[in-house]
Image 1 (cartoon, protein in one colour):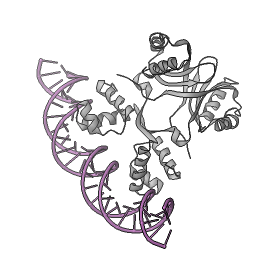
Image 2 (cartoon, rainbow over the protein chains, first blue to last red):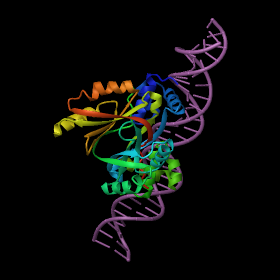
Image 3 (tube, helix red, strand yellow):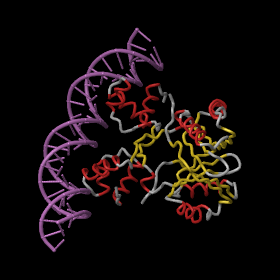
Image 4 (cartoon, rainbow over the protein chains, first blue to last red):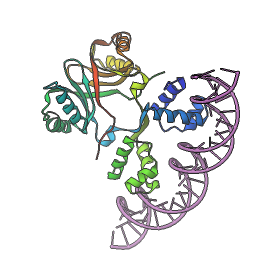
Length: 153
Length: 153
DNA sequence: CAATTTACAGATTTATTTTCTAATAAATCA
DNA sequence: TGATTTATTAGAAAATAAATCTGTAAATTG
């Protein structure tokens, strides 16, 4: 369960590109392919690496429009919260959702085709939810940085 | 450049798990491995698939603490904007940054070890930037949903 | 210190990717 | 429409990589 510097290096490398061969990784880490192979399997088994995913260029699949929505909910009972979160989780357009401290209850990141599609999403999926009290939308003018990579070295 | 339903299916599958073999994908798509192989290569060449990355369990690498920061900048000149964005891009703790419409200029998603580390990040990296006028932090109580997967079918 | 576990390297086997060839379907054009 | 080109596919072969096995050295534990 204890990770050493080699593990951290390996994790960083796989976060950048998980399609590298064990040979390529081994060369950079000055290890044998077996050593690297075993370390990766261990990281997977320990649920440190949870997934391997392809990243898609959203411009090319009609998902260029992005918005951040702040949401306030009516009731803060456990029931209402769980109900809201379950529903949000099932909405395709919602890429991220965080329950946060402060003025608003939730922050959502939404990815759709265009403003028209966003309006449709708001009207038919978000504001129609009985748990939702109010929303506030901010439109993304520019995606400056968007990664899931943690730097740990 | 035109994508058909099979391409979209393939993209969805690779967004879920990019480590599936072409044989596995081919079986699900009712195609030969070569057909799948060629389609994937084409998606990569066309820059539709841009990366293959490992997703890491942040709890296990000391990055459990997440916050959303709203940032206002002093000047909105092109120069100031580009300078700010370049700096932000280089900050390890910043996972996402969006230039947005509305009251604030930027929304940042920050991932660090704990509140202490967040304070350190704010004091030494964010608020020290000359371009920054003010910030407002919201702490993530619960990550309800966090994906980069677009649903396109 | 001996016993046990862990991490590693090298060799081997198994599986997968990549390339090649040929056939078929779809699109383009005279 | 019919001929020609272009894309897409399947199947086989070759090349490469993953996975397994064996043995050894280092680290850990009682």
